[in-house]
Structure formats: C-alpha cells, structure tokens
Length: 264
Image 1 (cartoon, rainbow, N blue to C red):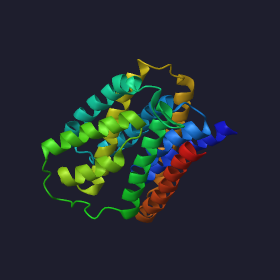
Image 2: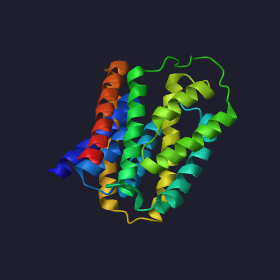
Image 3: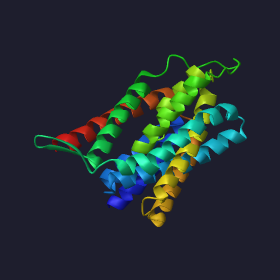
C-alpha cells in the first residue's frame, strides 16, 4: 500500500510542476521519507534526479516554444551547479551523524536535514501564499545584475544540495528582480536551471551512494507522466488560486515535519 501511495505522490509532483511551473519538487523528499521510508540523505539524492529529469522535460518543452532565456539560464546555472555538486560530493558526506547534543536532545544528520528542509518549505509556502507583487513586464529589455545573479545561483546551489529540492521559489523571484525577466520567461528559464543543477548535483551522489536505479527510474517515469498531464490541465485552471492553495498545503506539511521530527 505504501508503494502505491508513493507512486501516486510521484504523479502529484509532476502534476504540480506541470500546472504551476514549480513547487512540486518540494514534495519529493517528504514522499520518499515518510511514505516510502527512505533514509533522508538518500531521499535528497533521489529527489535531485527526479526533480532534475522532470524539470528537464518541462524546460525542453518551453525551450521549443522560445520561452527560455538561454543567456540568463547559463549565467545563473554555472555557479548553481558548481555549488550543488560540491555540496553533494563533499559537504553532505562531511556532516557528522550526530551534529550536537543539548541535554537529552540529539541533533542527528538525518534530523538536521529534515528540519532544514521543513524551514525551506515554510519559506516557500509564504512565497506562494503571498504571491509576487512584481512579475516583470513583457517587452522590457533583459538587464543582468551579474554579481547578484551569480551569488544567488551559488546560494541556491548549496540549498539544493542539502535538501534535494529544486529551489524554484528562490530562482524565479531572482530572475524577475535581477534579470528583469517577465514571469512567463522566468518560470520557463527556472525549469532549465533546476534541471541542470539538480542532475549535476546527483552526479556527486552517484560517487558516494548506492542507487536503486530500478526504483528511481520508475518513480521518475511516473513523475514525467504527471508533468504532461499538468501541462494539459494548466490550460483550464486559474494558476493564482491554485498556487495559493498549494502554498497552504506546503505550510501544513512543513509544520507537520517539524512536529513529527522534534516532538513525536
């Protein structure tokens, strides 16, 4: 039964990416950890592959329609995938199994990753619930704030490496503010950035972990089916209320993870 719910979750991840252009990746780790009982470190590695491959499918579809700004994607992606690779290859393996002890409370590596992930979920949920006041405008010339884009790319790369999520809720606002991209192009460009940095980050895990390829490929395949269904449904659904509702769901999930890991 857990396996059925796990693959249903994979479909939901793809559906959300297809309908919203992001957000679904933040569900991948909780599904792998709590539904399929996979170790958090391995779950973040699998999430990179699932998120990267699924985002690549959506990104290539947008690229064929001319919605991706390749120059911006390259400038952002290079520091991002360098940071995510180094994080997965060296930083995550270097984190001790027991980070610290406070009286009877022991902060383990697995617990630390899940709590950090939950905090990012809360930040992402607030971003989705509040929406964005500045969505960029069509027809305005793209101007790159190179230092800020490079810095943001590196920061997002480290965060992605630690928790295995795509980081679209950080990338999209950065592209709108620092590259002056209109929202539609920012979302499309974000998918290509997420794909490149996630898949390159996963290479660092291949060198450190034993990968169950049969499971990973089947889980990813279901997610890809979901993104095609989501892209189709996106024609009939208003994105704004859907994104806000999904934001509330992510908020509840973040609170649940913190409560479960710390108090239960």
